[in-house]
Image (tube, rainbow, N blue to C red; front, side):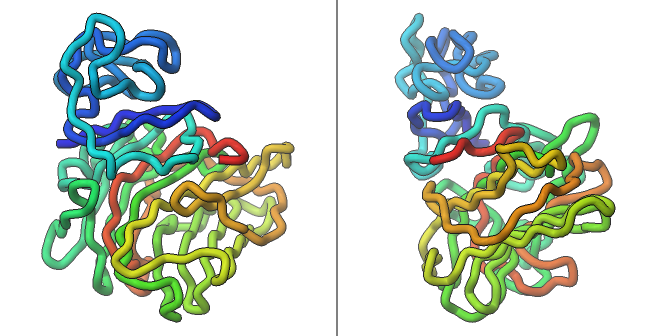
Length: 311
């Protein structure tokens, strides 16, 4: 099982992430990270599986493979292909992270709750090799996977504020005149999100409000303002601050490979909600089984805070 352990706040530089236990065997493995020194063997969120307890530690962001600057340790292996894109200001306070390498990684994610998750593919459990080890392949109608919004007192996603990001190995070009659903809230009676590549080749994000306050927000990235290429991997990130009080920080941003896209659409204050234990995020197709994504999803992160402006 691979654990990714990487944090940054605002403009902190990004270190490599990913691999088998990001600093898996380091002891006394880091200092001078976010929040001071990490514990035994530690870096990043929750430390590692065999090295100890680390908090938000490590030199720079999430430690470094050499085992830190403290009492040393042998560090651990990293997979550069699993790193966040250069220039992306990854938020603090991760809520959920799954490598999507195996079914166990979906049902028992590295962070957050996953026990009510589901994977529906043909063949069953179609975990396909990717640049970052393995991911879930969606390449036919009725294939999808879900992760719960919340469970057992743990919230994976708060629709009022946060960020969601993942890698996607695309099996289509963004100019293919075909709709591809990336993810959506599976039951939007009380609001939720949709991110899709439309049949007219725009990239569309929809935020639907909870209750009667506010109207759905629809943000569009025009076809000429982004590109997804067949057989090329992209990193996709959505950042949102949708507070009904309309604070100055309210907004939605989309990022492709760490670069902010030109998202067009007027935003009104929305009455969004926190995650609910009886709702899920659905990746790969619509609730009626159509518009399948056509590609491999890998390494999903959800954060409690949005991406900072400018990165």
